[in-house]
Length: 96
Image (cartoon, rainbow, N blue to C red; front, side):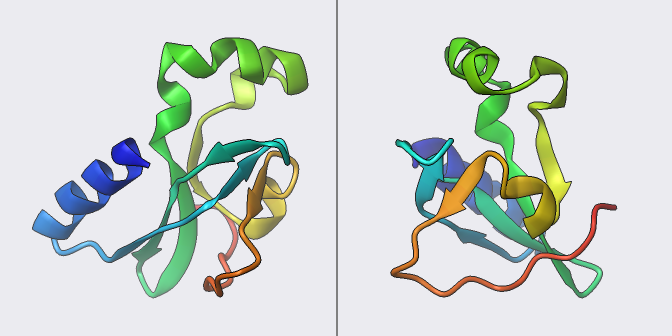
């Protein structure tokens, strides 16, 4: 959560709107990431996955070469990220 909040603060300094999400990585590991507004469309942005602490977890469930979640759609994220259903988040469009 700390990485997501810090990223949201930095984006806010550049007038980029973002929402800190809550959910799970691979359906079982608590995780947060951002939803950002770019050119009138929402996208997922998960910069935390670039940190080495996620390497082993990502290897276990997914191809490591595809781990960077930068401006992704709901369709792309559904294989790895699950949003907390207690909250309503905007629909995220196709990849840039």
